[in-house]
Image (cartoon, rainbow, N blue to C red; front, side):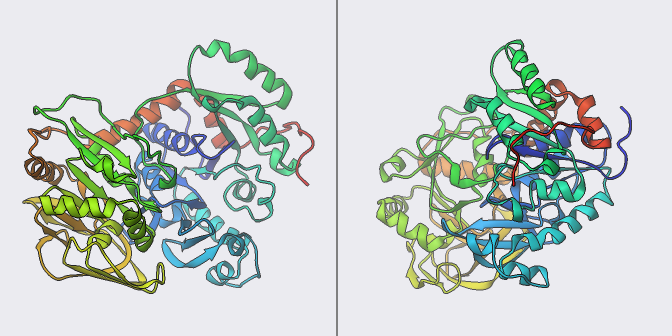
Length: 519
């Protein structure tokens, strides 16, 4: 393979949200890394409740952390300079260069008065004022890596937001990066989506739309080829790959708000249990659920079945109930009470049946919450299952702790405003344990293999299940296998020579304009 020239790049856009931009970006990163190319991912602006803490203590989207792993590089704040964490349908916490700078409404973010500094620009509205910040981050990456693979957000044809866009055509125009548009054919209408997305862009934006990539195709590709030829005739643009529908990718997802509640099961491995029983895990799908990827390591264990639930009766047959993180602890508490889940959790605790609270879920299991920051609700009573009092601080804790629990080493990461005062119980990952109820602020702890197996043995014993953790499950190895699978999808089903030429040389010259174009 020829060497990629320094500062090459590509933007992966999509016809819609969930078209597969994150997967394709990660796949291209892994494919390039396997060719010896020094590559980095980049997403100028991300909206997600699933986030990660880098080694320097910066908060970024988990999708970008996963893409960095695909690229075999350490994630940094440069890879996701703007992160929006929804707190309601109308407002989000804005994380700038890895640190929170305040809450903002959608109207305030996408329009308002100008400011001089990044923080002032943000507080005054004017998303486009951040274009200089994100392009500076991109330039720093381009000065370090051979190639940068950017991920867009939603669709580049959101014509109502184009003036302030910093994540799709705004960043592509600033960097002069070629754009490949990904479409999910499993939803139908992919050709119309490709054509319409292009035709709604201005002539200057269309100059950078190099072509398309079909995602989630089922069946005989030869049946699709006439459509791709007609699309090329209509648009003058090539299709750079047809990626097959692939079960069990199990990669970190961008937004926990889209989790299906009805019997949703996340599993990375299909394997029978080692012992005589399976272990059933129910995850309470609380409002504003964040970092639900914490349970992926449980779902990776042979014989562990994980599902998301929102009704009290669904806890009845669960061997372990997880109350996950949330961007709204007080709102989650109210939801648990309204749905009868709080009472069901109290009964479980009284019966010695396992419950695990993580971050916001840990806070909800405590005795009392004082919140003048996140919900501004003031004093709120918790579920009282753990001897913990929580006070919300204006400063966010962002950390990468390490320690031991159940005799095993554990690594994790922390993202929270709530400061927990532990008043009793057994110490457990800077939180506590009382009987079969555990609570911790540490995300990612279950990815530590020895600790996860020890924890599942405790759960199985308390639940009376003859479940035995597999002795050789390595979550890190499984994750690497998933990322290699993404690289395989690109290598085997995309026109890699043409993609490489795009990354090296930019969009082809003379691409035709499709009317009507945007104003």
